[in-house]
Every structure is written in structure tokens, then in C-alpha cells.
Length: 229
Image (cartoon, rainbow, N blue to C red; front, side, top):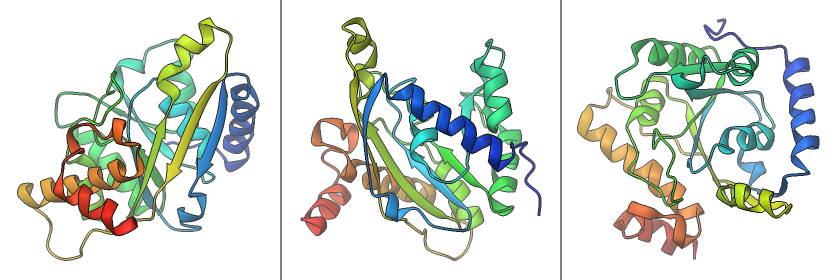
């Protein structure tokens, strides 16, 4: 089954990725952990926190398998950014509404065996800590049965300040263990909310305490942290 999303050849994708990694050395000092948690084959959904404009290029560089990302529709007509996203594989999302076209493309890409990255918060947390997650990622995972791979990245929010001082920014990325939602009947609104809390707490458990935001005192987070202690 072919993906409904236009994607580049693997050769072009990974060539551009290498260029990004080279250029990024001048901006970032990256530390990436948990790469062994990324499935070697098959489709999955990367779920990530979202605190900076730099999240997308950092995800692009850290993920060793070719993937498609969600991007806000406002960037679609931006010079350079829009055409570049189109070339590398993107699903444009109209914020503030149920974007049916984006949902159909996402389901089709995952069912075709693709990898998709999404920030469940839906928009950037400019202050850094996690905001409440939306149910989109849970919906896609529930309807397709694919694995969810948590990814947290922090430190990139200091990039602008460090650039002014001609300093590289220390960035940490952590891939968590894959999560599979329970099989069964299609989840409705209440169950999707519960799944979303589970996903967000898995992200929060991978983050330093100061980044856990609205999930800092969530009982499920305490359970996850105690279990890993």
C-alpha cells in the first residue's frame, strides 16, 4: 500500500539529514539517548514535547528512520520553509479545528507502513513545561494499532540567547520505550482522554521535573517515576 503523503527518496532524505547534522554542529551540542527503543521496522507514531521552533529540525536529525511530520498550516506559504517541508514529507494541519484532510492523510500514511511524528500538545509551550495534551495522537494510534514512541527534547529553548553570545546550545533528546494502546473496540472521547494522559505522563517521566508542567503532580506520572526508580 502506497502512502498518500508525498515523500522523497530515502537517498535524498538521508543526504539532507546529513547536511543538517553537519550544520547543526555549529548551533547545538546534542546528546541523544534511548535510540535502541526505536523499532527497527514497521510503522509507528513518534510523540514529542514541543517547546521551540527548533524541535522539528532536531527531531529530523535524531530519528534514524525516515518519517513525516505534522506542521502548522501557517508555515505552508512561507518562503523556503514551506517548499522544504513539502520536499521532505509533511502533513499540514489547520489549528483550531478538526482537520479531516490531515487525519485521513495521517491514517493512510501509518497504514501504509510509514512513520509519523506529532506533538500532542498541538502548539508550542513557550515557557518550556508540558501543556495539556490533545487527543489526536491517541486517536491515530487507536485507529491504526501502531506503536507510540515517546521522544522528549529540552535545552533548545535557549538557542536564541546563546546565539547572541556566539555559544552552542546543549540539547538533550531521549527516546522512551514504545507504548501500545490496548486493542479492542474503537475508543470514544473519554477513553481517548485517558490514553492521552497516559501518553503525556510517559513524556513527563522522561523529562526533568522543571519541564513536566501540568502533569507534574499527576498520579500516573508518580507511578511511572516510582516504577523506574
